[in-house]
Length: 149
Image 1 (cartoon, rainbow, N blue to C red):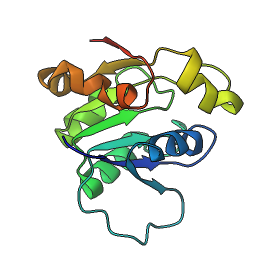
Image 2 (tube, rainbow, N blue to C red):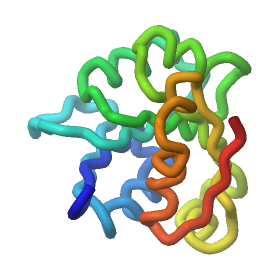
Image 3 (cartoon, one colour):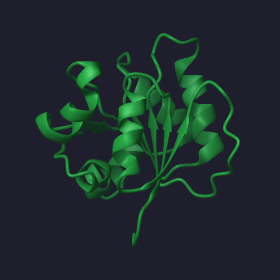
């Protein structure tokens, strides 16, 4: 794709806000939090899910955001239970991957850019996609990534 991609970050807490700041440097980025989004987003290339797993119906809520924005790729940045990524992918028939957050949330911005290799694991449908696309969001930010499928 030529030019910046459109990235949506859902959840603007300790993980989502620094992630939004980072992706905003390279892409057209929109943050979504508890209050409704007033601007219209036509096309979403990548959507990051950054809200806590312990909310009621995490899978259902994630599916609703995927249905609303229809991203090409959804990255779950929350710490989730085993099988959650697969459940979201099966419910939405979308490309969904998990990139667990590591380190101190207070240092998220620095950790994401300098200190960590993001790890990405994906759903079966995501595996069918070009493997480079799974790491693309991290590569475009100047961070390194590795996949575990």
